[in-house]
View 1 (spheres, rainbow, N blue to C red):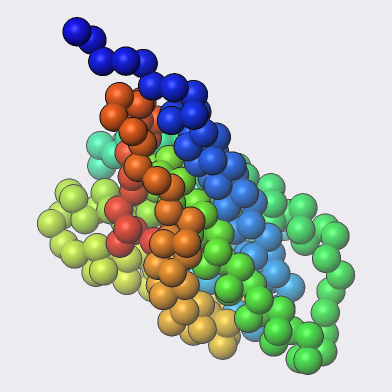
View 2: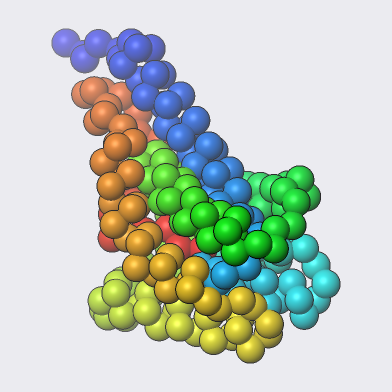
Length: 225
């Protein structure tokens, strides 16, 4: 006797929730990255590279983020890593959200505004990370590069992540990207924040017989822009 088909309440509901989490998380990630740019007190590692390339080329930082994400995604090919819906969506949504936010948020100069803005951006980034990863639609392009190198080389994820982020920070800074207290606070806070919000936004496991759209990304592979 064949198993009964899963009801819409058992499969469609979680899928809709996961899709909402995915795109809200990606949009908020772009917003938080833009707020770090506005605060001007230091960006997350990949943001330093994006800003440096934007300064060099004259292209908006959001478009640079999209281009870099697409290039990184191409590097997955020799690593034999398969992207998910979240991976491809990440390339475009984060960059568009960044440029959209930067176009409407006014410039700030007073430290009394910039410091709270920086802190709020880091917390929002943790919220966005938890939403996006908990949706389980595949890792971001940069995370996939990290985990792909881990699998191909046998080196630890921590080592791969450290090497990649040092390289992008140094390159970005040399090109004119901003390193500051925000960069340090982000590095210290994003792990605990992301782990906390991963638990907050965890999606219940699908019932037996439901279709899995994308596999869960490793919890250690915290989204790093």
